[in-house]
Each structure stands twice: as structure tokens, then as C-alpha cells.
Amino acid sequence: MLVPDEPLLLVAITAIGRALFRYRSELAPLTTACAHFVAALLLHHNHPGAWPWIGGVAAAVAIAAGLWGIPWRLGRTSERIYASTVIAAIGAWLAAGTAFGPARSPLPTMLVVSTLVLAVPWWAHRRRRARVKVDRVINAWPDVAEATGLAGSRIMSAAVDTWGWRARMALRPGQSVADAISHVPAIESALGTRPGAVRVEQDPSHAGRLTMRVLASDPHAGAIGWKSQRARSIADPIDLGVFEDATSVRVSVLRRHVLIGGTTDSGKSGVLNVFLGNLVACSDVVLWGIDLKGGMELRPWASCLDRLATTPEEAARLLADAVAILDARADASGRDNSRVWKPTSAAPALVIVIDEYAELVDTAPDAAGHAESIARRGRAVAVDLLAATQRPTQKAMGGGALRSQMSVRVCLRVRERRDVDLILDKGMLAAGWHAHTLDAPGKFYLLADGHNQPRRARAYLVTDEDVRTTVARYADQRPELDALSQAAIDSPKSRPAELPAGSDPEQALTLALAGAPEEGMTVPDLMQVTGMGRTWIYERLQALAAGGQARQVARGRWRA
Image (cartoon, rainbow, N blue to C red):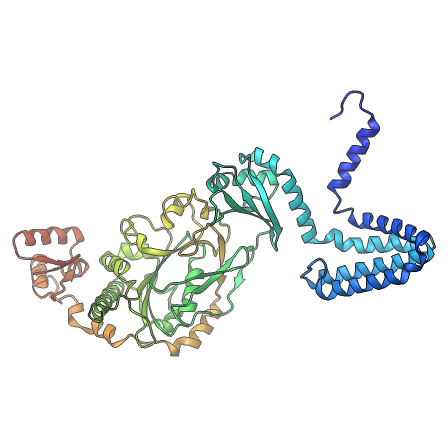
């Protein structure tokens, strides 16, 4: 702003001073050269015999900087080499300038040339440029905060990392992290970043603080190759992928049901393969699979799967057997006064992998009751579900009863914003879990114990060759079911009564209830026996119960 009658010279000096201060990092090589020229001039006139001391001190500092990064705590080898070279060059020129005078030829030419040569790495250094940008953002943050609706917030500290920079921020009293999340697009606009570059994470120790990350480039732009399995037991966490800060995504699946959701081409099969690639290496887990697309997804793993169902009938039988195992284990645990089933190689856990769960519900509705029973009661006895689906609607997930039991949820890209709440939970979209903005297969959000912040990650890429190699390595090492579980499957009590084709449904229902075991028969079993729907079964059961001809033994189980 020009004030009337203000001297133009003062205005010009002020403008030049501001420019020099703003670009002080870029001008540092020139400033250093000028300062050393003046220092050499003073030393030459006052202490011309001090040049050996100057050279010795410079050599010692150059060695310390090159070997240990002292006194700047430089961690990278390239930075230590650069610092050592600059210090040695400055020390040698300063010693010569002290002895002969800085104007003695060819010292001025050497100063100019060496300054320009050594300035190129300084100007090109990415971390220095990023640090300068961060400093300018910190200085301008009050204006940025005012423009983005976060007036009163301040940056407490900032640091440059591999992919950009991050800052710890304190919000004004009364502001919350939800306010910052809702203003992320405005922050990106004010900072001049690319869309989707800003991440906001809650500080777990303070409700009025957060961590803001600004990514100059996308760390997940390319696929991340799968190296090898880390899990050797189902109790070991599975290394699923990598977060944007290069930390591993590790999740435990023991006594946890897993839900993988995402739209077409979002990478569901890739995430499923990472889980399977780790589970087949575990010596204390038996794997069963259900793939109603003819086994297209799970058949490559068939050699490591104890059972694979590819038709609705096979799927219903498989889940019915899983319920029988669940009941047998629960009964044995009750007799032994043990609250949980501890998986070992002799008594392994059972994990049922279901590809496209919604297809199972549509084509094998009688299996839905078994799946819900497993979801409700299976965790304590180590019978777990690992289900993948494109869209876990209320209808597909049994009105939400099964989905509510899924304690590990992997949300890949979704087509509609509301699908975020369908896969994760109600209100997660507003809390910053923006899965609809994921832009590549394999990118996901993880909601599980210890992973309650909306942090983007990318799953490892498991190639067909990785699958073949893994299957060939572990196919002969897979454990078998324990004797108790196998006996539960083989028991006639676990199977519905076989009736002649074309039998009357009323008669079939009466005979099935009469021949039911003491623990009763489930509604899906009765549906399979009679060939009738769930509504008809419930109506007839209520009528028989009212007439004293049937009773409910336990939840969902009936007998005469």
C-alpha cells in the first residue's frame, strides 16, 4: 500500500527486503558466498596468519559432517556427502582468502564458479523445497484458516516426509475434527494442492487437536507387490497392505468375522487373495470356500481348501455342517468349562470364505439362517466367516443382523456415497471415511480394533503366479479337522431326514419334527426337507405349537 508523500526509495527498499526475506532459502548460496568474501577480507587485514587454523577446523567439521551428519543430524548419505563437500570447499577458499586476500586472482572466479556449482543441488533438493513451502504455509495459516472456516486454529508443529508434509494443529475452542473434515475441499483449494491431497486425522489424546497430512504425490499410485506371508498361526496378524505413511496394515482374524465390500473392479478379489495367501500358511486353520460363480475366484486355491462349494445345494450343506461343528464345539467347551476354543494344529480353527455373499442369499436362502447362526455364535469356538460382496444391502445381509457381527470391515471403492455407511456403519461417511473417492483397485479403508481412524491404504497385489507358488508350497501341509468336528459332520443328527420326492409338505414337516434330534432342527433344515419357504414354515410351526404338536427347543430350533 502506497501512503501519500511516502518516499519511493523507502517503499522500494521495503519491497526488496520482503522479497529477500521470503526467498531467503533460495538465496542462501549467494548469501553464504557474500558473507565469506567479507569474512576473508576482514581476516586478511587483521589475522592473515590464521589460515592454518581455519583450514584445520574446516577439515574437522567436513569429516564430522560426512561421517555422522554432525552438527545438523543429517540422516541420508547423499546429504552428508553434500554437506561435507560444501564445508571443505568453503574452508579451503576461506583459508586461501585469509592468506592472500579475497580479491587475489583467481579466488573471485573460484568463488563464483564454486557457488553456482554447489548451489544446484541445494536448489533442486526436494526436502528443502518442501520445508520452505511448509514454512510459508505456517506463516500464511491465519489467512488460510480465515478463508476456510477454521479461524482461530493454529499449526503447532510441522515436518516433511517422503510424500509431502504433515502438521499437528490445535483447533479453536468449540471446533472439532468433524469441522475440519467438512472443510477439506476448501483447505485443498486454499493450499493450491491437487484434489484429494489433504488428510485429516483425529489426535487420540486431545479432542481439539488433529494431524493434517498434505501429499504432494500419491504414495499408492502404483500397485504394491506381495512379498511373502508373515502369519504362521491364525493368532498372528495378517499383513494386508500399506498405509499412506508406509506403515503396514496388520489385522487379526482370530474370533473375528470379516466383511469385504466394494463395487465392481474395486479390488475385492485382490484383498481376498491376500487373506487366503496368509491363511493357507497357518497350520492351525481349516479353510472352507463358497463360490457360486462356478468356482472362478476360489478354485485356484482349491488344493488348500478342505471343501469348496460351487452350487447353492453344496453351499447350504457346507454351512449346515459348519453349524453342526459349532454346536459340537460349544457343547464340548461347556463340559470342559472353557469359554473359548483355542486353535492348534490338532484342533484347528474353521474359516469359511464366501465370495459374493449377496449371490448366496439370492440363490440359497436356506443357507442364510446358518450363516447368521455362525455369525452370532461362531467366534468363541473359532468358526469364523470371511465374506466379500459388492453391496451389503439390508436385504442381502439379513436385515443387518449378520453385518452387525462383522468386526473387521474392509471398504474398497463404492459407487454411491451411501454405500460407505452400508459397508462400514451409519455415520462413517460424515466422519471422513470417503470410500467413494478411492481411485484405484486395491485402495481401501479398514475398520477394526486398533484401526478406528479413516486412513487410506492399498492392499498388496497377489498375482496368479503368487497364487500358484503359494498353493504348491502349502497344499501338502494343510491340517485336517479335529475328531470332534469331523464326528459332528458325520453324525446323522446333523442331517435333515431324507423323504421321498413329491411327499406332502405337511406330512414331511410332521415326520421331520418327529425324527428331529434332542437339540431340534433349524428352520433352514425344515425348508430343505419340505421344499417350502420360510414364511410357510413359521406359520405351520406356530400352528403346531398352539396345538401342542411341536415345541421350540432353542432359538431357531424345533422338534415334535
